[in-house]
Image 1 (spheres, rainbow, N blue to C red):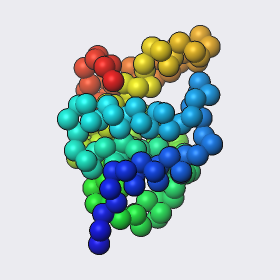
Image 2 (spheres, helix red, strand yellow):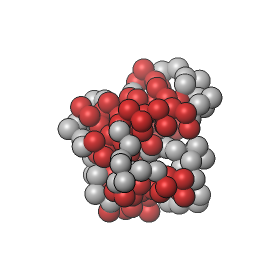
Image 3 (tube, helix red, strand yellow):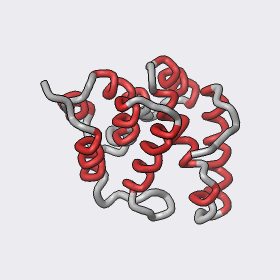
Length: 152
């Protein structure tokens, strides 16, 4: 079965998140692009870059797990995406354990956290939201054993 190219994965992710915005009101595809570029800059594989484009697709209800698994992608891409998908009521500890258990997922999450914690992105949010998110991202970095280096 032919595999989707990265350009096709990007187009699929952009279409799946069409009309969605981030907390700052920016098109959600900008976040996906930044995470994918962060993975590339960190030496990630094509599978990790594909997972970066799709990392929020199931969590944000842009794709179902079944739709994700039906895509012409290596199974490890779907595994990474599902590892990165937060589940309702899940503790940060359980989430971190799953990310750490799936090969390749940590690098994608590191890039995601780096972009989420970007001071320029956080600066446009109100103070309580900025503080809450900064603490949330720092806690997840600690749970994942990541150094305090948010270079995206």
